[in-house]
Length: 300
Image (cartoon, rainbow, N blue to C red; front, side):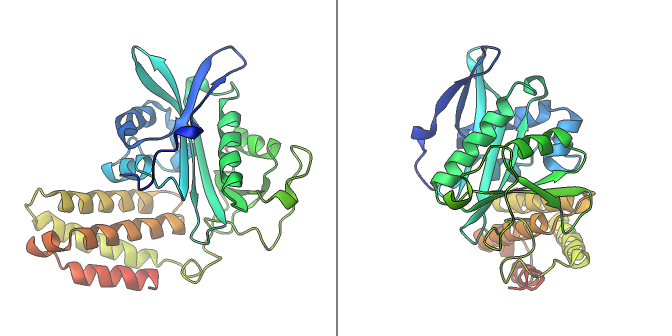
């Protein structure tokens, strides 16, 4: 569950240029089913631009991460419409604060039928407002080079676009949020400074500077899958481990295997082991060995 009170003061409504009224509010844990339906209803192209792989629906672990957020260090706004007596999600924008406490990474996706209505711009502006109000210094995103509408939107809002250091198919967009560098005309690129630390790069911290050995990760997944196949327990702890393994496999199978995604998956797997240690050991899993191996891969 979310670890901080729901920020009801951030709930707003917005009227689009065509007169449509849309509710904008922070996401809630009980939005999991609505979030799942939203992702399933996206076109293959929109899902690819958002997740950069062929994901068709969110795993239980992904759903929990996306809807049970820590409102102090991250934010996710959903745009909702009242349809048939219930809310329907038509867009979501989120950021997560980097461990440095100064930068954040954002992501946004709008339902296909609601694109080109100004909704994406409004949601990204709202996300920027909150991140800036919370004292963050920079917002960073990773966009496929072929996603020209998103790159154009970022340019209009003042993001600087640069080549991604890990993958030529990606572009990094960076916006300085601190007041000293925000007194400029909209659309002007922000000058890169040594103070602007991109959140999702594998740079900027001792842990992040260490590249992940993908071969070792694949070996770890293979070994854990073999052990999990022998476990007949249907416990929640074991299911969480299976979900974490499936999520990490999807990342590894993605054409763009971003190191920080793999690192996040490994952290999630380690947490799942530690949270269900007794159950894992009782089911015959070599939990201690897996925790130690994950730590070695992460350089902990």
